[in-house]
Length: 218
Image (cartoon, rainbow, N blue to C red; front, side, top):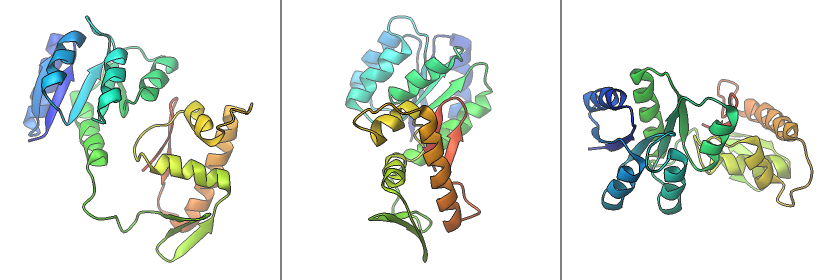
């Protein structure tokens, strides 16, 4: 059974989330403090962590950082702090998704299912997966040529499907010499990359924008 750890200091909210998750067939454990979650994680391996940002004992960002140093477990962060900097910091630390309070428990369940689907290793390569070779990317019999920057950008996004990359993170990956470029440079490359991928599959959107956070590959 899939095991989910809910780290949430609002007791009533944590209980409601647990009820919804159990109803969907997930084994669910609750911790109301960050340090309590630290101790639990030393002895258990959940399949996903639903992690609040503001926690007593150890805050959510610190706990997320500690988890990422030793584990690739999917992490969904939740918080009432909606400022963009908090969102980006959470994602840069390795969170797989980010939900702002107030939220619907049904939305949380839907996000949990989506993140778990992305994290599950496929049994075989999907027939609709993009194939990369040299400076070309193909889908079925169709192929397009990418620039070196576009290919590096696509490689970064495809290597972590579903993960949201901020513009700053993408610039660090695409321009390792840290030259002075505008964050809109990434937007321009993304626009060109999308246009070329659209030629391969007009009905699909492989690279998606996440408002206020960045881009991800689906």
